[in-house]
Length: 217
Image (tube, rainbow, N blue to C red; front, side, top):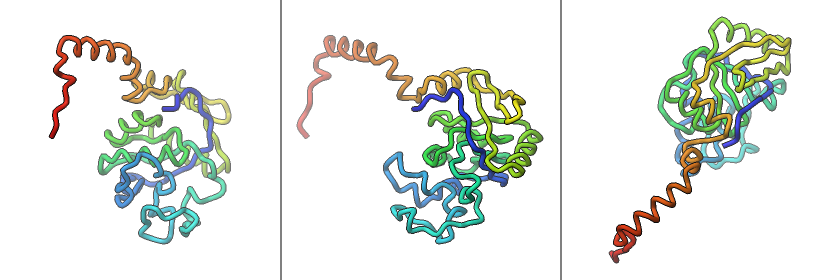
């Protein structure tokens, strides 16, 4: 997992409340047994006019919706997603943060997130930031007023820095902060103890050698 320390990026606004995970990545794309390739289908029903979208269809063969925010030139290359309250509600599919991260976003800002989605973001290298609704509303106005509007997120200091230098503090649980700063997902956390795991397995095998036996079916 890529570490998250200091990130500066263009902000894209999704000006809708209660955006659910089926809107983030529709159910037909969950058929894949891989963990990759979901970025092109982020917000599929909103991004494209040829519906319903189907897995395996190249993006070049789709018909983009010119009115959708992510298809507008001013938000090209955006890496910070600005959203309204209760973002990520609905089913618990981990494909939702996968799609957001694989599209190119590194952080999300909203007044609130659905709990499971919020947790899944941290496990996949995304930083979900909760800010007061009044602050988020002000940021929406700033983004809409200034094309190419960028924010800087300093995770170590826990601040969002506006273009004028104004800093907005945010809270993040210390363990989650540690994992993001060091690029550690659950597997990475476990592999820090790889030497101890191997030593334990070797000792157990020496004490109980029959555990290594295999039996024909």
